[in-house]
Length: 497
Image 1 (tube, one colour):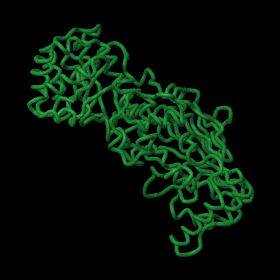
Image 2 (cartoon, rainbow, N blue to C red; image 1 turned 90 degrees about the vertical axis):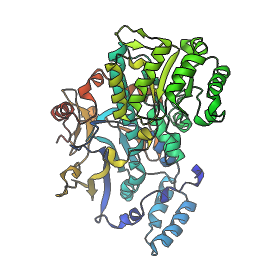
Image 3 (cartoon, helix red, strand yellow; image 1 turned 90 degrees about the horizontal axis):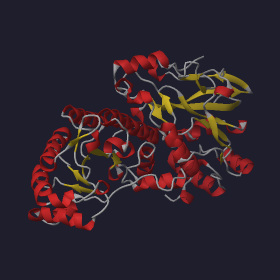
Image 4 (cartoon, one colour; image 1 turned 120 degrees about the vertical axis):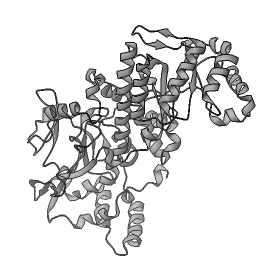
C-alpha cells in the first residue's frame, strides 16, 4: 500500500471502533504505556528499544485524517459491523480542530537504550479532553513495536556471545561488527518486516544482505549506508556448471572477483572433498595468491553446523597451515575464512564457538549468517510485549487504574503516571503513581499533536546500544542462568511506588 493510500482510521483492531462508547461518562484523559513484561521463565532479561521513530514518521505524523478517509472508514465499518457504530462526529472534530493531526503525546525511551524487562518503554496520552478515546485507538499500531525491539534484542544477544568468544580467543574485539550477517530477507513475512527487522539488526552490526533494512535506516534514521556485503555465490551459480565442473565454477569466481573478499558456497556436493581436493589442492595456489583484503570465505550450508565447521577447519589447516595468535589460539591464513549460515541461532553459535575454542581455534576464523532465527522465529510473546492503561481522568480528577488477574499475576499492570529513572545504585527502575521526579525521567517527548519533536540517527542509536563491559561476562547473557536471574532480582527494581 502506498503511503498516500494509507488510512489511519482503518489501522486498528475492529473492536476499538466501538470503544469511544464504552468509557465511563465524563472521562477526559486516558494514559497508557508499553512494556516488555518480566517473566520468570523469560529467555531475555533486557531489551533494545528501537523502531518507534519509523512508525511515527510513516504512519502517525502530519495530517492523517481527511474527509475522504472519514467517509471511506464510515462505509467500511458499516459493512463490517452491519450496524452504525463508527464515530464519524468524533473524527470530524479531529479534522476540524487539528486539521487532521492527532492530539496525542508520546514519551519514550531514547532509541537504542538497553532497558531491563518489566520497565515502561513509552507512554501515550491524549492532549485534548475531547479525544480521550484516541490513546488506545492507536494501540494496535504501536504494539507492533514488539517486532523491531525483539529483533534488535536478539541481534544484540548474538553480539554478546560473539564478543565474549572473540575477546577470549584473540584478545580483541576487532571486526566484531561484521561477525553476524543478516541472511533473513527471503525468510520474513513481508517487505516491511524485512525493512524493520533488517534495520533492527543494523543497530548492532554492519553486515547484511537485507537491502530493505538498509533503505529504512537511510530514509528514517539518517544513515547513508548502514551495512555492507561482499560478492557471494549461491547454489544456482555453482550447480549450473554441472557436477563435474565444480572446480571450474570455483575458479571462475576467483577470476571474476580477483580482489576484495569473496564468499563461495562449497557444499553443493561434498563440502569436505571441495575443501581438500579443490580449494586445498587444484586451486591452492590461486587461493594463496589472495590477500587479507581479498579473503576467500568458504561457506558450508548443510549438516550439523558445529561438526561440519570443525571438520572443514581441520581440512583447511592440513592444506594451508595455521598460525597462533597473541592469545594462543590457532588462526587460518589471513586469506582464508569460513562463514556458517545454515542452522544458526543463539544456541548453535555458542556451541560452535565453544567447540572451536576447545579445539584451540580462535573465533576470528569464522563468520555467521542468520536468517529466520534473527528475523522470523519470534513473536510478541518472545518479550511479552503489552500496552496497558494505567491512569484516567474523569471531570479533571485523576485515578490510577490497573489490571490484576487472579489467574496470572504476571499479567498485572502498572498504576498511574509512570516515569523511568536510574536510581542511586545506577540501576534502571520504573516509578509508578505519578511520584517520579521530572528531572530524573528517562522518557522524553518524541511526538505531540501530530509532530515529531525529537529524532535519532542510527549513529546515535548504535552508541546507545553498544556493549558494556559486563556484557562480556557469561553470567550476564540473556539465558536462563541462575546468576543472571539473581543479579536481575537483586538490582533491578521495577514498579517503585
